[in-house]
Image 1 (spheres, one colour):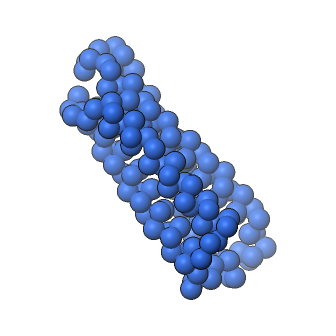
Image 2 (cartoon, rainbow, N blue to C red):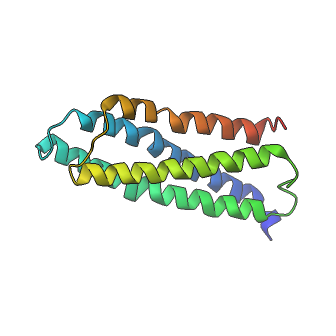
Length: 146
């Protein structure tokens, strides 16, 4: 059954992954801009709304869909060679991406409660994390170097 649906599942996995990554690239950028606002100001409250909606309405559902379709791909017979190193490197980066997602959720809560202590520079650097992880994941899946 899964083998027959493989192209559809893979397509949905890629679509949901692109949506997840789009949010993962944009949310830290919102944090950079949010740092420049005064807590309680109209601008700060606007950023809180934008961050909340981005995380809850786009990033979280897209991550869940990515996981669901990814698990279905893994369960499809013949898709994964469990002895291949690329698979384990990709999986490790996926866990790191998920951990980064959790960190961004924590940072959003800190902004919501006007408790952010991190700098604009911190969020500018953090903004690069999903890019680096995505590059490694794509190379592992497409080039399968080991």
